Image (tube, rainbow, N blue to C red; front, side, top):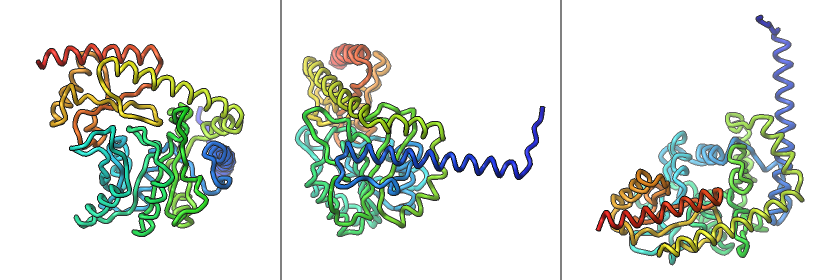
Length: 370
């Protein structure tokens, strides 16, 4: 049976759907604003009108690269960094990721952290090669290192960017994924910024709430010019109505969210400590971490630190022979070979099995290469 609709009926249907989407979007923004105000300890309540929602933080980064930079421009970012960031800003907008090496070829990851001097050096290096720098991109807490940036460092970076007319994008998707004895300082907690119109904060549901399948990312910005762009572009990465409705309903229950986050942080801390102990029993070291869902594992004693070929050889051996997938540092733009990212937040039995296989694989790899 074929059903025919008149143009008037189609117009009425479109208008009804548009109204539903707008209402769902408003409820979601209000719920997210309340959650961010509560958990980020913001200096003032987050205004829902400053929030722009799209289908995931990946979409947020893609849109901001498109809005803030032109093809061929560069965005500075500390490395190692989640590898997808490169494609987020490059695939559509053709913007380049310029490294701020935290771990360099000649230092140890456990003793090196992001500093304003490293930001300045990366900026000067990019300028000296005739690149146009448009922004600095930060993940705070950091992926994969697990560093939480101090308020003092953040203000230094904001001030430097203000001096050079740069935007700052702060991805806070791991904001609540911190260990129990650490404290996260959100960008939204600052009462004043050198230029509030050039500092933009990202958040999403995939990490802290474990809802990667519930594709929701949010951009917080007070820049009116950017807001006008986002109102148009967010349409192309809109969130389905049922997803917005589901998310808004459970986020509105702030007391449940408090209970959940408390439990989550306790379990996250316990799992991190357990995995560090197991890795130390293997005679290996893990970089000190304050949050996130990864171990930054030092396998330099196994594959050396002089060659990415040797790093990839170890990676391939563990994957093919033991079905253990740990991300090699090369894939995360680490300048020094021998570091790997290990996810420790899966089911306990899966993590234990993975660590058991890792231990066996390393022993046999050393024997095979002896």
